Image (cartoon, rainbow over all chains, first blue to last red):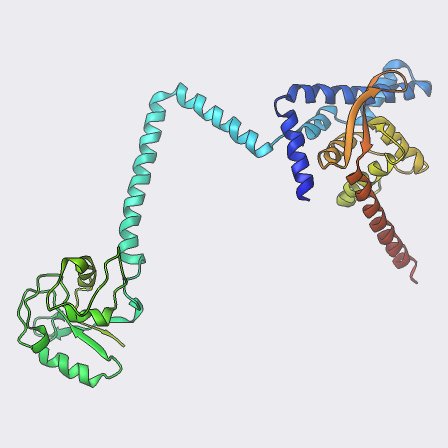
Length: 243
Length: 113
């Protein structure tokens, strides 16, 4: 089958630059057939005109036959595409203002589309850069008096929850509000949208750009894993847990 | 080819190819001669639709089953002669065997009481 196709491609390539000759040959081939048929008809006693007319009628639509035969020798889709392309270029050259508007519209459309998709991809589609992002849970306190549903967890509550829910073995606390928490591991003052170092074993961030997180570092954030810290802060969490 | 039912289109195309290949087993022929040979060999039962003959010849040539060259006809006109290639001969043998088996099977079915 592959050999047949290669053979067909080779033959089509041979006639690619010589389409007129192919058409001429086909004309001659069909004319020969009609002449032979007319000769045979004449031998049965028909007049020359009648014999020729009958030969044409027996043959059918000669134009259609030639078209169907010629069509086989074309790289149909490729040649149609090339023809469309040439036509489009000619039309664009003819209407320059239309071309400019069309190109600008397309450019703006593609640019806007790309920008929107980049945002949607980052915010909605792409998973968080942690080992099991679907198991990360953010827990808040509610303040009914102030009708606030995303209150930072009080340190005492945090430790109670940590003990009360043993399946969530890796509880860590962090804050999005600049404040000092008077609790042992949370005593550091955090800037907005940062996550404390103690969150790391909970979130297990993936390695990025060659930076590798080391838990053996002393108690301060280093520039090596700063970008990872920023990702963690996106959760804006009061407490994170992986169960 | 003229058969009674138009719904047999696929069969007709396959059959036409087979008959064209068979017509060329005894040497090169031009299109008109192929049509005449099929008509005569079938005792005037089968008549090739001449409009379908040339696309079929070109299709078989593109598939490498036929080769063609221009020559002088019996009445000294310039004509395109088609001949079987080795691949065409192999294809003919395979298709003939298949056709014989199928037609025998259909005949057996039709003769079953």
